[in-house]
Image 1 (cartoon, rainbow, N blue to C red):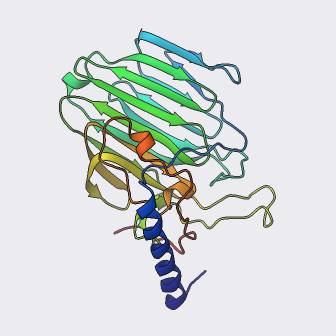
Image 2 (image 1 turned 180 degrees about the horizontal axis):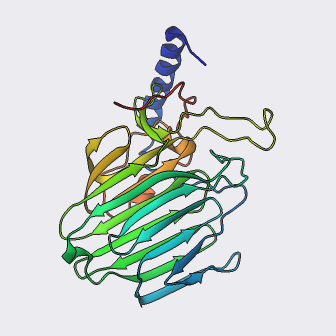
Image 3 (image 1 turned 135 degrees about the vertical axis):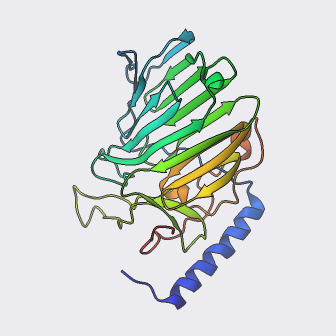
Length: 289
């Protein structure tokens, strides 16, 4: 599939012009997670014990839970592991479960790892001080001898569905490594960095069982500075109270102005709620050099 330069330039100019008008009216930032058509169903396994509330219910544990090995987070649409030894996230995967918003049709690993660079002292004594599990959301707060580390996730096919936050005395570097077959690329319509697998969308009219949207995502930082960008790796230096997350689907290509520089009550300041224009899917995305 190809697009000539003149139509592409016209479309891109129109999109950017519309975005400038929208940006003057909205303080933009990380998008809110969408609700998948088929809902979510998170389960978290710690030390062999699985916490999976009944539909519409939730589980909340506080006061400290010692964890060893890997904490397994499994949902209807996403799944990943947390290694307590490193506090890194591994094998972040989209399941491809049937849903109008899905971007893959079979289990597809998106990130090989998302790892914070912490000293042995910062990791020492790591335990789960709070665990919240609902159908479509999970919050896991780790307490260590020197600070806290929080992971939040949504069980959805698209939207703002993952976030990591640290609260230590100084900044923390995060290294994101994409899984094989996934790559970072420059979106020609938006001028921003996305990641995906380059496979065009398939509509329900084209295939009733194999339909999917284009796989599109982006890193979503706040109070963080990018220190490295390759075709498969990004590094972020996150300040105390900051975070680095990820968004998928339309939220990954909306023409927002970026998150505000805040560390408290950021959600209300950075809402988009689908109010910004969504450009077309990129054409023939190619990996960054």
